[in-house]
Image (cartoon, rainbow, N blue to C red; front, side):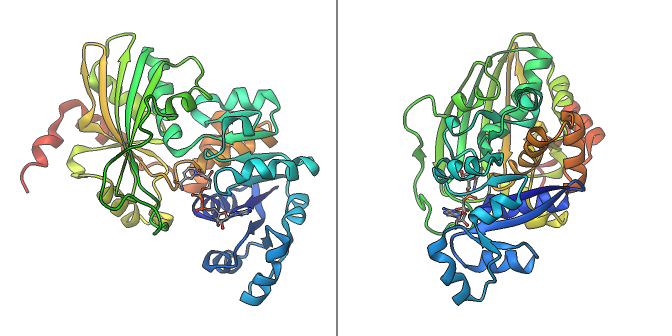
Amino acid sequence: MLRVGVNGYGTIGKRVADAVAAQPDMEVAGVAKTTPNFEAEAAHRRGYPVHAAREDRRDAFDDAGVPVAGDLDDLVVESDIVVDCTPAGIGAENRAVYERHDTPALYQGGEDADVADASFNARANYDEVAASDAEHVRVVSCNTTGLSRVLAPLDEQYGVEKARATLVRRGGDPSQPDRGPINDILPDPVTVPSHHGPDVNTVLPDLAVDTMGVTVPATLMHLHSVNVTLETEAEAAAVAETLTDESRVFLVPGDARVAGPAHLKEYAQDAGRPRGDLWENCVWAESIAVEGRDLYFFQAIHQESDVVPENVDAIRAVCTDTEAAESVVETNRALGVGFGESEETRRVAADGEGAAASADD
Ligand code: NAD
């Protein structure tokens, strides 16, 4: 069993800890937090040993009645690998702690790419990272993960001459009442291209991709408007089939009448997903359109959870000899990734009947 420490137990960290606990070949060595808040109490209730990330905060945990298993150094020593899920920029500061104990570490997409020896997305570059013997690896951000999962298969199947995406970004996560905007629509960043395209190139270095970002008053998901100029012509139905074959892409059928992220989140909750998580890219089958070599579609990305299975695969890529396909299947199986509607989504994408169905109520 791989012993995995999770440093930073917020939006991403709590999900990574639960995903690790669900794997047959991994266990949670413990989690580290700075603040003994409701999340620390919940971690303790889930049975994860809670460590005080900062020595000067240990008394605060005692005062709050959250038992402390040790400090960050103790957690690193007890772990075969640490997944750093601290806020952007803190992971870079923590690298020295992991190196001091000669413990491999994963970092998140809020860190600059140079925090690690390699950036990672299972669909894009699992094999390269596994072969490189990199011990400090950054799992790319939610938006970059979402783009990489569709651009990699499109490039393999048809060739990508140029990809362009406008990323309509949620202003904050549901648990972040201090984020915004609350009544505005912001070019974010206002400079073009946004950093997301270059970030895709950290895992797909030869892919031509430009991105623009807009931030809106929403918390549920990001929405991507994607345009890809392919190197060869393709029918929309064939593209739908290509994407359906991807285990971490959910082709949303038109007759499901999913209007947007609110419906997707409701669907995930109805399906009994933990925290209403959607680990898959959600591509509207009806939106897939091709004109000549120009492909268009919309996809929604659940920022809180799409990187979670990627972190699990990155653990195996760094610590084991597990092949990419084997790891992805194992991770998907343990978490329950995939809605398994491939025949239906193929049919709906091919005949476009969803558009008519959604007009009548
Ligand atoms: P978060 O604020 O929800 O959680 C961070 C946690 O780390 C909090 O519990 C905080 O108390 C704790 N913390 C703060 N300083 C710490 C320290 N010095 N040591 C240990 N713990 C500390 O943040 P998040 O949204 O989970 O983001 C974590 C990382 O994941 C960032 O790099 C972020 O860019 C990236 N990421 C976030 C999202 C998202 O949408 N939330 C998506 C993909 C990647």
